[in-house]
Image 1 (cartoon, rainbow over the protein chains, first blue to last red):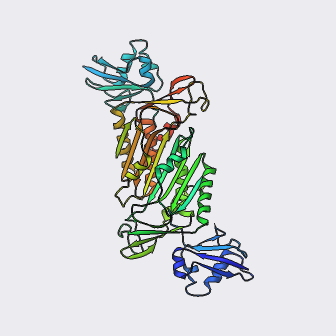
Image 2 (image 1 turned 120 degrees about the vertical axis):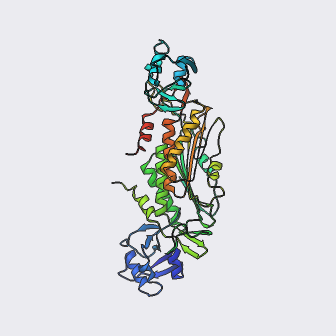
Length: 84
Length: 84
Length: 159
Length: 159
């Protein structure tokens, strides 16, 4: 019932961790719901809802907040990308 | 009262010469008039008026048939360019 | 259609030549090299060009990066007729003047090569998970995404 | 802003690198390499792709060629903000797979580099005095100007 959660760039620095294993309670079945659940832990996790234009990828595919999330998935949160 | 006239590519091959020195008679004062005058020599020079989309450059600048031509100029006739 | 994410530098000339090596049907290779600019600094409250960048560190999302780059190349290939493409993106710490990214596309004609190369660069800027942290005299800061990059990628959207 | 007309081959990687060598303000180098295609043959009455090109000879108008290339680069520079550009065009006899032309533009940002590079190529195709004669199994023939090249150059016309 777990998902692997990853954080990158300034979000990773703000949270102080690059990855976390999170238990998915019943009813938490989208990327947006997972983000809100982690943010509800309080500081510094609230950065997940205060970071401007936060992006999310489920199983290494960029998705929107309504994208489904299930046990075993890899969910990554990060700021807008700035490569190239 | 002379102009240097140059020919390139298939026009050069058709005419059998790469360059010519032409005396400018009074009244021949544009690139188009010079072309018509040379073409009037007959075969193979008529290629100057039968070649499709013939281009002209005066002093190494592409110009239209109305461009002025005077003694001492270098006038080149050639087919559309195909470099690159 | 090879993509690479690597710390090592690359040889633009060798990469360009490889796309047409042994072939007689490639008429056009369009390519792009992106480099670290020293005048790129634009931290909070600091105008562009005012802050000298001393170095830059590129972070990425291993695994997803390669998939995202491959997907961008495939999307370009679905839009334009080309033979081959090559993408190289460096990660780690880079100094001003160093190469960051390379994109090249080989096709019969130049129109397709230019369009696909620019498309790949525009999408790479908005869809590939890379993040830049600049070191300036004022300290380190993460580079903000540029609105102009979203705009550049947006213009390829089909009606 | 250097242009060269030469028989010798060129080193794309060295040319690209030279445009940003010793600088920290170049963020983008867009470049293009054109090559001889064996399937380019399209003599009178022969469909494209049907005639194998065995070699190609490039004739040019010495003196005007360099001026025309320089004028094209200057026109591009008047339209887009870039630091430097390099144009190399080969002449003489070339075989399929050999490089013919190189254009590269260095600027701060990629948009200007891509646009100026493509503009220079499009104008070079219609304004620089080069002519190609192809050798095919059917004999030698001069390559006809392509309407698509006029079209490509025409799209840069300002309203």
